[in-house]
Amino acid sequence: MPITKGIQALVDEAMEEVKTYSVESVQARLNDAAVQIVDIRDPREIERDGSLPGAFFAPRGMLEFWVDPASPYFKPLFADESREFILFCGGGWRSALAAKTLQDMGMRNVAHIEGGFAQWRKEGAPIETLQERKAKKA
Image 1 (cartoon, rainbow, N blue to C red):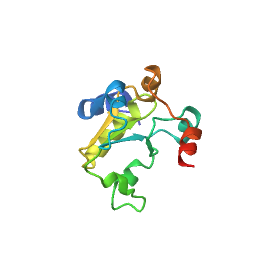
Image 2: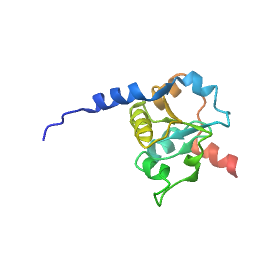
Image 3: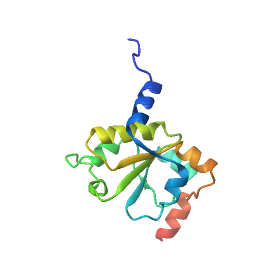
């Protein structure tokens, strides 16, 4: 069966519908209590490359389940309507698709970072290793 709509078309459609922030604008809001940064990358990517300071880890494969209150995997963090959830992935494609899916589920307080972690790193924005994160919690 041939693919009738490729990944680029899906990403392009998502980009038209979701709010997209630049690295600079997200960096300025890292300490804003009304913002929750959400890293949807695979745990192996996070372990290898680190993440944004204060990011909540929500693997892409579980995101919809963690957001839905009817799911046995629901995470109450996502019920906080006073916060804006800014998603990111490695390059901005997965996060665009994920933000669109969350919008399709009814969330209006969701956006993503243009260019994802690759752009974040390229612009020299702060990165926190897992070891640094663990040390803060100790």
